[in-house]
Length: 65
Image 1 (cartoon, rainbow, N blue to C red):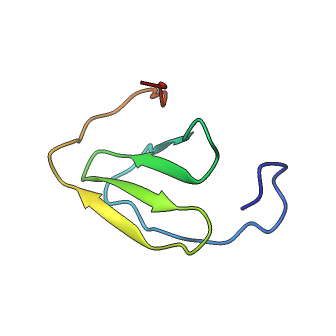
Image 2: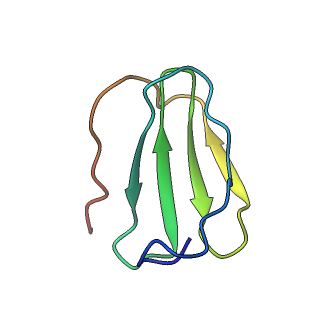
Image 3: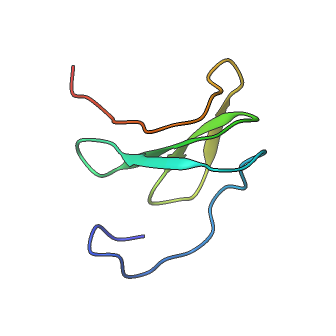
């Protein structure tokens, strides 16, 4: 999806419910954070990396280093 919300498409299915999403500071990736697992998704290709150790519910934010 573009930063303006156009070109939306499904890129990752999150296990569990009540997922939260946060864009990276440069807009190239997004973090999908959920109760079963979390994912870092490449916004251009839709490929993703599973982060099984990062699970919970609530708000998230992607902070710059």
